[in-house]
Length: 328
Image (cartoon, rainbow, N blue to C red; front, side, top):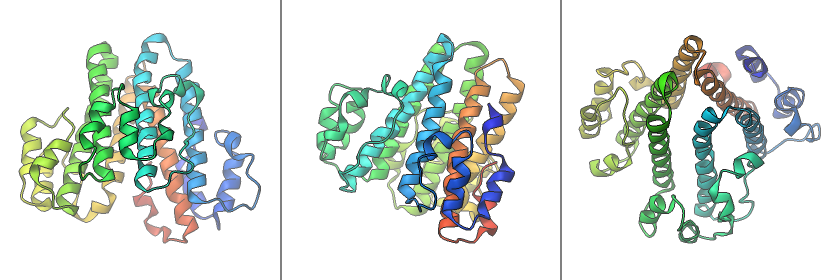
């Protein structure tokens, strides 16, 4: 599977392209992207949203091919994994409603995914307001997540965080209750670490960029933990400022994940940590679900890297710092 991924050397070579159209030509001739890019006329300067839509389509088509052929045991796990994309689709619609962009609310989703995504059957694209959307979802699991936010002064960011929190709760409960043996062990390690790092990132962001009451921060932390203990979360939230918060992180199991001068690279550091961790696990636990999880993560990361490179080329940005943004 990894043989079809774009190598780090190839990614860096794309930075030296003189235009976005040259990158599109490269993708048209790449085995993993040719099916969605082949119809693009040469020389067309695609808008960012169009490129992201095509890359997202290539990603989801790739996932659908893999997940369709898993055995029954692993198939159950990846149906929970699909929930992440269902929530992603839901966030996409909420984002458009919030920004008053009611046109083009449809986002590409493979047919196999649609079969397992309740929000597609509910026709949520017919909603004109957030309140209407929540009402359409009344008899779904998402109603209890979103209904408390109707009529309240909630930012788009806070709504998305609540949905992410719900996804991690579902994922964690499934791993604990339905996976067993080595599969359960590696899944808990991978996703437990991701939850810990996500909580750290969220708390640091709240502390650094927003004057947010502590009770609000508590309400947005994911209520599952791996290496971080309850007292660790309390300590981070109760810290007086971002500097004190980061000092506590340096004393935790995740020492070195974040430095003051690297705040801008916070998400990159988290993803690079997860890349290194999953590479190690997949290399030693070859008889488990870990290699498949790792491949899917690498594919997602490839799309994120391509998006960053394309925008760098589009705006003629300084590429000298690009390696600080590329996960490898």
